[in-house]
Image 1 (tube, one colour):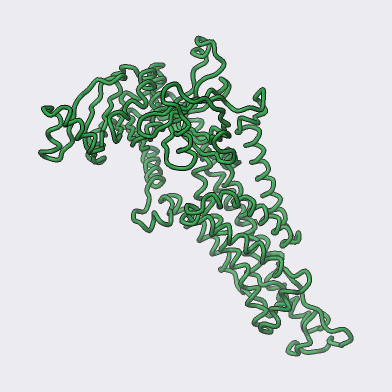
Image 2 (tube, one colour; image 1 turned 60 degrees about the horizontal axis):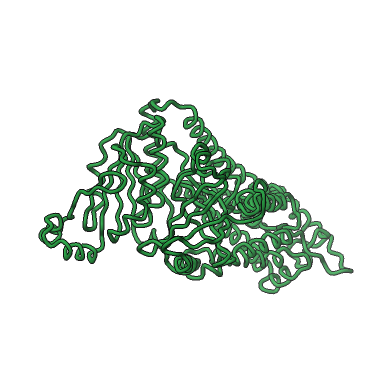
Length: 575
């Protein structure tokens, strides 16, 4: 921030001194004042605040483009005919867009640094170039003396860093205005939240360095120390928020966060609140610097209140009482827990959405996201059952921590009753796939079937109602042991039945399970190819929800998928 010329010793007459005289160091010296005015006329201090506006307009324009595209999707999904055809050029552009959205840079380096998809990478590269041009294109970077005002590059980079502060918070909240405007769920915005934070730290460092270099040029370490500890100096007040920002960014690195996640989870938000408060102190309401901070505070409070009073069902203002939902935890084979939550009928969700679940009897402070594995009951079926509640199903794989504790507390026979506090639903799929694709292919591994189930159920419901152009659905499900196939038998039976448009292929990948089957059926020809040629053994069996092929061995997905891509428009779900 700007700091005007330092004072001169009292009692000295400096009016007529030349600028080269060390005592000519304030506007009381005519030469200093003239040089000061010339420096400000050349590069205005207050003009540097406009660069914060330029960056704000840039990301508001980006949000506006995404919001317009989202509005088009909503209009198309709501009003387009089932059999409406999309122009060839539009289909090609959409295909290119999907390719860029899904394509990731291969290799361990990309995985280690969690590099984004091609589309996000291009957007971030353009944004980075824009920021670099705003920062370094305009010269001079420094003024003739520190007393002529703050270095121009320091002011504009500092204001741009401050302009990113509201965006960082808007991209972070589980309930946020960007998701509302663009339909992009918060977990997908998280990667932008991280990279915008990196940009903010970069700009903050660029903001800091000139305040060190300029005094060192003027008078060495003595001048730097005097400037740093000068009463009201921005150098001193800027150090704590910079340190807080460095800590926030370092803790967000994936290898740090994964190793000390509980620490990161507990300190991340308090550290950012402290950072925001320190920024009020550092900015000193200079120019419009506080406008960005007030906007940040408003966005954060709105997000917290919306999540608390609407998404968090325990405190939802539309619910009759402050209580959690009743639930039953049932232990399944293979370390899986089926959690059935009784939600009020007014609580609705769509296929592909997830909720954060908190189980006070197991852990008061932990909540974890889990995909909802079914779709809501229709009002007619609820009336037939004379119930004001419907079940929300979760399949939870036990690893360690809360999921392991949940499995251990579950009951294998009738289920263990408990109270669940639900925060959600979040996420979901914008596209109405059943109006756009003739064929759907679901690929799931193990408990990933839970993410496929609601889409299959919705497909069955829509096909029977005549609201879909989808005529063929394939399910490819890889499990370790044969008994795992019983995880979702009831759900598929109830919703799909013996539909001729669904064909299932199951792959049992555990070699030990195959060996057990060989021991039990030594003469089975279906298992011979495993030993003789290494190929997949296959049998066709009738399961509760139709006919499906059961294979023994680990499949190669490329070999499986290519023969299935026969329809004009095909969507593949990988879970």
